[in-house]
Image 1 (cartoon, protein in one colour):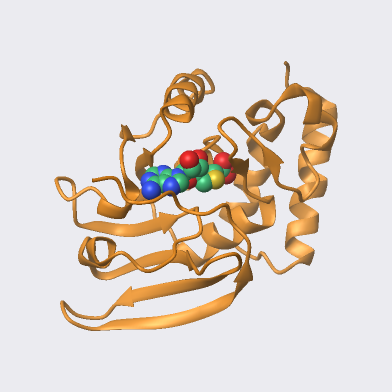
Image 2 (image 1 turned 135 degrees about the horizontal axis):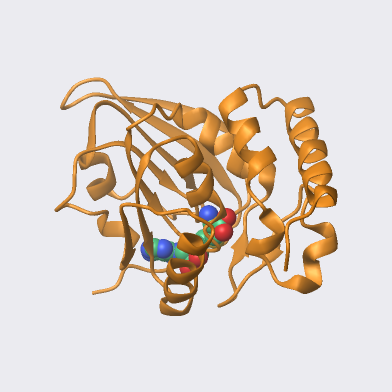
Length: 213
Ligand code: SAH
């Protein structure tokens, strides 16, 4: 598959749609304009790649809606050089957005097929996270902690304590919490012991896979 001026036009339109839906962070909108989303999904969906839709990827998972990716990216308030932990690499589209925002990204995926596929594919587009990890997101990444930001891109049945423990003071954890439907929940760490919690509306994600023992 190729990237053409037609795709570029569709991406500009998608960015305009996201702006109309309330995305105002120009760095996020510029990332949407730049990343060839049609290359992240099966070619049979290519025609629809720049609509605000989710699509199946491998292993019964989905690439999130562009709005959801843009919303999560905006709420994280990524600064250049931020150390960011992403849980649920999936297609790698959100990873690419974080890299366009100049974060240092650690991305965990629990399904081997997706881990393999995406860790091969993203560098081919020039997107190089600090690390791809095949592992269990419930545990976070204690060896690399603390993080400026942690983003979870699957529906979590509860807020894993390990993730709260791995954010820096002043840092953020953004996680969709709930079964079926999720409430997008933002935790800002105010001090070693205090977290400010914000609920930012309902979203629908594929469920986070169970903790592995
Ligand atoms: N950001 C991705 C979203 C993919 S869907 C994208 O836009 O493509 C959620 C992803 O989380 C899936 O790839 C799924 O396999 C992964 N996942 C689910 N449970 C997980 C867990 N416990 N640890 C790490 N990844 C997990």
